[in-house]
Length: 486
Ligand SMILES: NC(=O)C1=CN([C@@H]2O[C@H](COP(=O)(O)OP(=O)(O)OC[C@H]3O[C@@H](n4cnc5c(N)ncnc54)[C@H](O)[C@@H]3O)[C@@H](O)[C@H]2O)C=CC1
Ligand SMILES: O=C(O)[C@H]1O[C@H](OP(=O)(O)OP(=O)(O)OC[C@H]2O[C@@H](n3ccc(=O)[nH]c3=O)[C@H](O)[C@@H]2O)[C@H](O)[C@@H](O)[C@@H]1O
View 1 (tube, helix red, strand yellow):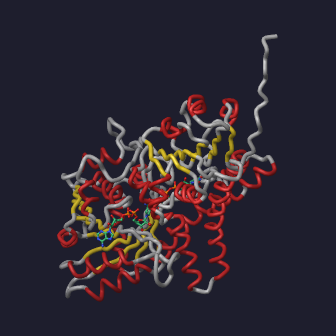
View 2 (spheres, rainbow, N blue to C red; view 1 turned 30 degrees about the horizontal axis):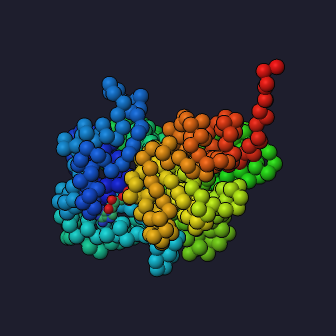
C-alpha cells in the first residue's frame, strides 16, 4: 500500500527533525507531527524552533545554501509538513504512524531508576487503536526494551475496531543531537525490524520505499523485530562503553605521566578500533546513554543474567566515578575547600551544539560544588537561563541555595570576573578562542582552570599564569625563561 500520509506522535528531538527530513525528501507525502505539549507545537510553528541544530546541508544534496533544521522546516512547513495538537485527526487520516514519544527511566514503582517507562508509548498505542477507522502501519521509533513491539501489538489488538488491522515495525533512530540533519540524510544505516509474515514484509517494503528516496537500499537493514529493538540499546551501550573505557585510563595517565589524548590517538589508529568516541571527558551525558544502558541492565537482571547486567552497569559506574573524580580534584586543588569561593562554569549543555541539558555532567559537577558551599557563575551559549535554574533546583532539591549561590551570565568575560576558578564542562568551540589573558587579569589569584573537556591550550594558559588541571594529563609548570636583557 503506498504511503501518502504520515503522522508522528511526539514532536521532540527525534520526531521533529526526522519528519522534517521525510517531508523534505518526499514532497508528495503529507507529514503531520503531533504532540500533546501545546507550547512545543507552538514553537515548531514559530520562527524560534524548539531545537537548536547547527549542522550544514550535506554535499550530497544540491541546494545553493547550507541550511540546517530551520531551513528545512521553513521550506516545508505548511506545504507538506504540519505541526499540530490535533492528535486524533492526524491519526485518523494517516497510513503510517511513527511513535516517537519519550521513554525515560522510571522514577517510581517496579524497576524504578532502571527500567524504561513505557507509559507514553502505551498511551500513544491506545490512542491509535481507539481513534483509527482504517488499517495502519505503526512504527516504533522511540527507543524501547526488547519485546516492546509485542506489547504495542497487544494494546492495539485489544482495542482495535472491527475491520481495522495494525502492523507494527521497529525503526529505531540513531541520530545525535547537534548533527541530526546530517545523520538523517547521510544515515550509516536504517534499521527496520518486522514480523516474518506476508503483512510484516509488506509493511517493511512500504517503509523502505520512503527511506530509499534518499538512502541507498544496501544501507537499509531488515531484521526481526527483537533484533532491531536490541540493536538500538546495544548501539548506545557500545558507544558509551568506549567513553567509559578511555575515561577509565585518565586517572592512570595523570599519575604516570602518560597523556590520554596520545593514548587515544595511538589505539584509534588501529582500524579495528577506530578513532571515534575516544575523547576523554568529565563524563558522558545526554538523555539516552545512561537510560538505555540501565534498560539493558534491568532486562538482564529480570532474566537472571547477573554477570551480563554487572558488565554493563560498570559503564555507568565508571561515568559516575569520572564526574566525581573531576569535582574532587577541583576541591582538593583549591586548598580542599571551595566554600564561599566563586567558580565560573563554562558550559551547561551535555555536549556542544545543543541546548539540551538532560543528564549533563555539568549538573552533577555544579551540584557537588554547591554542596561544598561554592558560589557559581554559569555561562552557556545556548541553554536558557531558566533551564539551568530548574535543573539545579531539581538536582539539589534546595531552591533557596540555588537562588543564593548561582548566577547565570550571558557573556563569558563577565561570568569569569572576580572568580577563583574556571571549570570547562562543555566543549563549545567558542571557549577555545576566548581572550584568556584578559580573563586571567580579571580573576582572583591564584587563578585556576579545570578543563573537563581537554579543549584548551594548557601550556599557553600556564604561561599566562593560570594553575591548570585537565583530564588524563599532568600539566607541568612551565619553565619560564627570565631574561634581564643580557
Ligand atoms: N534525543 C535524541 O537524540 C534521541 C532520542 N531517541 C529516542 O527517541 C525517543 C524520543 O526522544 P526525544 O525526541 O528526545 O524525546 P522528547 O522528550 O524530546 O520528545 C517526546 C515528545 O513526545 C510527547 N508525547 C509524549 N507522549 C505523548 C502522547 N501520548 N501523545 C502526544 N505526544 C506525546 C512529549 O510531549 C514530547 O514533546 C526516546 O525513546 C529516545 O530514547 C533516539 C535517538 C536519539
Ligand atoms: O539514542 C540517542 O539518544 C543517541 O545517543 C547518542 O547521541 P547524543 O546523546 O546526541 O550525543 P553523543 O554525541 O553520542 O554524545 C553523548 C555524550 O558523550 C560525550 N562524549 C562523546 C564522545 C566522546 O568521545 N567523548 C564523550 O565524552 C558527549 O560529550 C556527550 O556528553 C548517540 O551518539 C546516537 O547515535 C543516539 O541516537
